[in-house]
Image 1 (tube, helix red, strand yellow):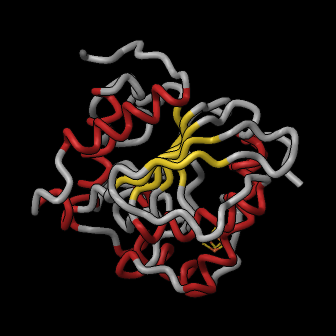
Image 2 (cartoon, protein in one colour):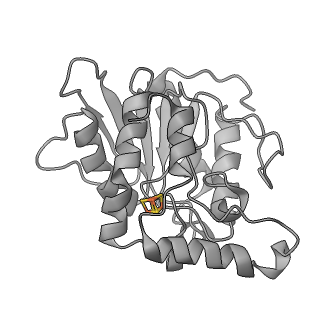
Length: 242
Ligand code: SF4
């Protein structure tokens, strides 16, 4: 039982529950990509990134092999992370528009970024068993954030499907039929227990290279969803460029 986000992050980074993912994250960390050969890869489960009293939670899929698995920070160090951090900065949710390595000063504002699977999977595809193994970490994280959490942005349909059962387990009522994922959709989920405030759930296409290179997701589209979630969460705009 974790009582704080710091305790959660600490315990999570020692998890070895998924043999395939443990082997992959460590192999990638040993072999490295040529461009990062002088860096020490993290090579462990990647905890959520951001304050423990966040009002907005951004939920992705899993860390990238040479992104989060290298930097140790969720959604940083790869192209998708570059797009996300730039959009967060534009909406006043981070203190700088780029994140290149650990210790570069990045600070998220009122916002935490996490994923339903905390270890980098081969081909960015966790198995259903790996997703289910990792769910308890997300359930715990949602519970610890609950006192301040007011909005959630889910990046992609895979994360959406993984998050809904975690939300139900964490004390929010997930309607039936289940809310459907789509870019720009918004649902309100009320608590199924008295200590859970309503949460606004937003869908957004994942900022993968496949989506951003093809124009399926533009920076403006991503900023629009993040800004709506920030406003719904009551977060400040300090640091926003506009
Ligand atoms: Fe543990 Fe999750 Fe990593 Fe599996 S994916 S080893 S459950 S942290």
